[in-house]
Image (cartoon, rainbow, N blue to C red):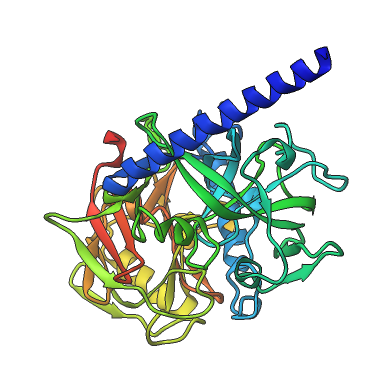
Length: 441
């Protein structure tokens, strides 16, 4: 009898907890429908990040940023990426921004790499006989009252290209990355909850995610998965875009090495709308893979000199450059980059110095460059005028231009995006830029 009473008490408690989170879900989702919300993007070098090393010098952080950018560039190689690629190839351990999201009912928080170059949301789940070591406990699907395995076949299962069916008829996913890292597991749905900067929790029921049971490679124990923010069908952006956010999101990135401790932010719904004076907009190009956000670069001006962009490995017409929040530097074809930096150098009254470790193409002694030319990025229909901090990195001893020549794809990196409110409207298929002081929160 006592066991029955204990069982009944436990059942009632579980029911009350589930009912509480269900009510919270209805209230929060309704509020999100009528408005918008924002969440923190934590830079990996921020004091809020588990990767933060207070002993690192600005020079060391600069070198690490360059290394991560090179790794990231390799991940966008068109020879690897194609319409048949199951997931965008990224280097998970080199993620620039982190997001805290929660999965399940009751919600379990995970700290994941936020990535505009991939789609699938996934985390490690128990039991996990072949997981990489992580500091936080594994997500236990058996403890979530809203967790559901995805059957095979189903629409959700077919939304990923590389899936299979288990012996019990459930959908299995497999993703692999360019650095030989991988995640294999079961495709599932559960409530994904985003904690807004106002303290309000905004849940999204029946969100598709990967429950990893066999993961390995170069993942870091401090993170517990990946949040895909790309344009594919299973990304967080696309999935919540069918509900309250109407396919709109934006972010405001705080400049690298900023002394301000304010975090960058990503905004959804009405908060994600970019409008008002100074806004310029350019079309998103429809290309495969749909994961990436392709823009069309027409030219770059250095002062009054307009240098026409001849294209990249993505082609010479529409969609010739990717805008990516996970790449620090901006990569351009070698010939075009040489012409661009030649125009920059001829307008600066100082002698270039040898770049550190051959990492950059044009550097000067810090303090020797008192004036720099005005640089404008000409996208189709949008002229984006850059500030000095958008194209020069300085560690106090040396100042380097972040335009970098490459034989790979063209990428518009996050340093050039800093102090701009950048909005993505996936319904209208446009990207908007508005000069903004992102350190003011």
